[in-house]
Structures are given as C-alpha cells and as structure tokens.
Image 1 (cartoon, rainbow, N blue to C red):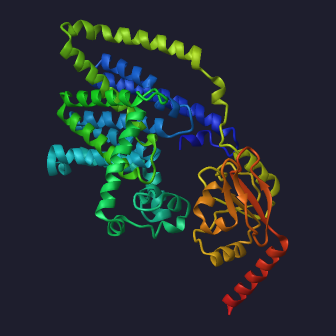
Image 2: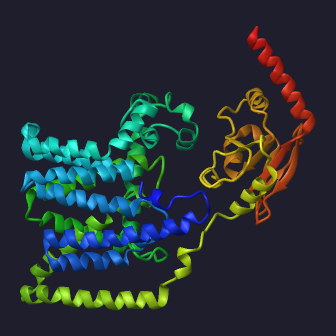
Image 3: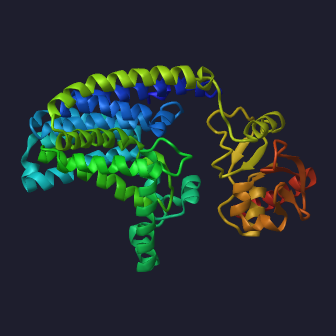
Length: 480
C-alpha cells in the first residue's frame, strides 16, 4: 500500500521505490533507538543502533525494493506496545494496530498476533479471555488489516489465505505459478500421510541447521570472510544472555515466544524457500537484546560499572558519528539509488518481445523467477505460462487451444519440462541449444548476452493454420 504512492509500470518505479524503502529503513533505525531507550535505557539504545547501522544485511534490504524494513518497523512497534500492555493493558489496542500493519506489510506479520495469544495464555492462563484489552487488541488488528482480510475472503474464500502457506506442504514453483493448484494443493494431513517419519525428521533437522546458519549470517557483517559465523554466534549468544537477565518476566516470555515461533516456522519452511530475509525483521530486536547482554556483561566484569555505563552513550555516539562520516566518504554511491540492476539477458529478452510480439499474438514464458515482465510489461501480446502437465498430447492441445505463436524456453522451464529435453540440450559454457527437429517450430532468437539462457521459437504459419483447424473441429464436436 505504501509503494502505491510511487507505483508505476515504468522502469523509473524502481529508483523511486528504493528511495522510499531507504526512508523506511532510516525510520526503523530511529524506532529501534526509541524502543530500546524506552525499555532498557540510553546506553543500550545507542549500542543497538550502532550495531544495526553496521549490519550489512539490514542496510542492503533498506537500499533495495524490499518490504523487510517496513515489516521490521511495525514488528518492533508491535512488540513495544504489547510489552507495555503487560503493565498497562489499555495500550494493547495500539499494539493491535501495529500488528495489523505488520500483517498488511507481509504475511509473517501475523505471527505477532499468534505470539501475543500464546504469551497471554502462558502468563494469564484462560483468564486472558476475560480481559477486554485482550479482545481490543484483536479488534484493532482486524480493523487495521480489514482491506486484506476482505480481499482474501472475496477472492479465495478464506480471510487468512496466503499462497505461501501452501508452500509448507507442496512444490514451491508449481504452487506459486499455477493458481489452479491452490484449491487442490496438498495440506498438512496429506503431507504427513505421504512422508515417512524419517523424511519428516530429516526435514526438521535440515531446516533448523539451515535456518540457524542464515540467522547467523544475517547478524554478521562480513559475508566473504569465514569468521562471519563466529560474529553472528557472538551476537546471538549475547542476545540470549540479555534475554535471560531481562528483569521483566512477562517481556522475557513474550520475546522468547516471538523469536521461537518465527525461527521454528521458517525452519520448516526452509525446505520450500531458504532466504535470510525471513528473519531480517527480527534483527533490530535481537541486536537490542545483544546490547542489553553487553551491558549486563560489563556490569558483571567491571569494578566501576556506573562510570563505564555513564560514559558508554557518549563514546558510542562519537564512534557512530565517525563511522557515519567514514562510510559517507568511502562507500556512498548516489548512483545506486538511480541504477536498476536486472538479471543478465533480462532487458534483451524484454525488448525483443516488445518489438516482435504483435497485438493479438500469444507467447509462452515461464513460470520463471528470472524473466517476470508482468509488472511493467509493454508487450502487446498475451502472456501464458507453459502448461503444468508434461504430457505431449496435452501440450499440443494447449498450443492449439490458446493459438500460441511464440515459445520462450529458458533455463527454468528447460529444467522442469522433460518433454522439451528431446529437442533442447544444455552445453557446458554455452548454455541452451536446439538439438532436435521440432516439428512446426523455428528458432527465431536466442540470448546474445553471454551463455544462452533462453531460446525463442515461433510456430510456423502453416502449423498455426493446422492448429486452428483442429481447434475448430474440437469446438464443433463439443457443440454436438
């Protein structure tokens, strides 16, 4: 919704969206400081934003078109007001608003509502359901996220629908790109029926290790240096130390449940999609607790804790200022805000289709995670995905019924469609190559930017006429 302020189908959308995301990222840093100061004091607050400013993963996400900085902002505000609500329950309504905004930002924002519910049950037991403020939270959450809830109810029959939930039990690429599978996608019961206990245990173990590694990477600053995992482990250990020594028991319980729910969920999800971005929204909160851990550690070690702690804000502020000036002078790249980085061959294919596919023509492309032109496309023709089925006859009828003119075969489609491997091969260092006679197809273009990542075929005119005759006969048979 926020991106709608600058949204456009032109390529200029990306630089404008980058600037907007950068502003949101800076706001998240400011909120991190305010939330940390309100809960743990100035020394922890300055130390937390010092670490956050150094965190290359968060900085990178804040300088590209990404929702994670916005999600981090709302998660942090939601966490703050939920925690304050344990002392003054009336503010849970405000927490519900920020939780709703987190959910509007991204589906995983809904985890805040789940963590809140579990925490209340842990702390208050069933008595939490008797609290008006508890229900005020959900009323505010529902009112804030109503646009998404209503849309999902109308479009999918489920207010909490999220296509990513289907990925927990099915093939990611198929489910994302073939909406016809959404209604018949495998669910949890079917998954556990079809998989042996050993397979499930292996998925859990692999997910925990994999997501743990990604979390350590997201807390580190040196992606090319092997020691980066040690740095991440130090921050995570300090965060755990800070959480254990947090004197506010209710805040401690809620924070632990929030972190565990995010981590366990995405550990299971790891088999479908492995990405650092899923836990990046928790990085500010983790760094706040890491800073709290350092504060407690200094208190335990120092003979003069008060003098050190009183000097810490000033010292850290000076270091942060020096670091900021250094980074501005050595690493600031204003052009990066205006530069648009596309995958190799992306624009080459886009402009070929724009210049060659005519109005009324149909081309097959994808499903592809690389060449996705739907957002800003000015291609005149109709775009369809390759059919889900791998059956030769079904493929032929699909081409016929949809009167397809062009087929774009890229690396992703080649790897997924066995029927294409009779005619297309991959040569090491050269890319894709036509190796067999495709009846009725002619190669009209191929990737010219390096190794051939895609081939474009056109169905010859005489075969298109045959397809039309077959379609006419099929339509006539259906009428009788």
